[in-house]
Length: 145
Ligand code: 5GP
Image (cartoon, rainbow, N blue to C red; front, side):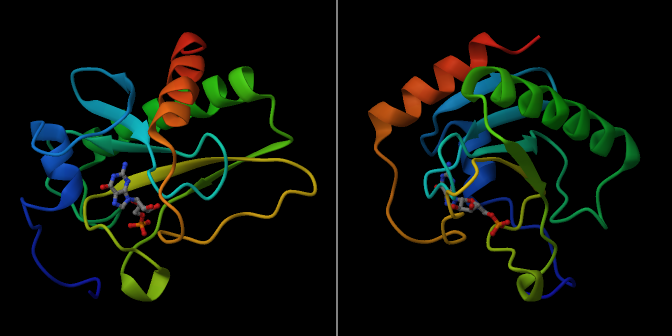
């Protein structure tokens, strides 16, 4: 899908927000939701979304909603660092299929990185173990301030 198009209210993240699809939640407030990526590119890979903004990408989202989702992304990045002690934290946000985007509901990736550990493939590969994702989510959630 290109940068042009319409927001699909039945995309997988919209379904997660509505509780129609499962997710391992890390954090939720009035506006935003953070949950574990089920095809993680690294241990502790978290996704952060706005719950109501019907924006597919950063080009479409209203400034106020972008502010909310960005502030939650920073909180998650800090919590990931505190919980997992990575050597680096990658924050990524993809716009359009040519940029690698696969889910068309604006989201930020928070991916902890460790020296010598290669990053996993994007949006593919093995589905994570749910019990492990829950443990990671709990550890990260404990560090959110
Ligand atoms: P994008 O390619 O749009 O930047 O990122 C979409 C992300 O969503 C990918 O990292 C992919 O692994 C993740 N993803 C795809 N389907 C699901 C799902 O059903 N649940 C969760 N938690 N993550 C998903």
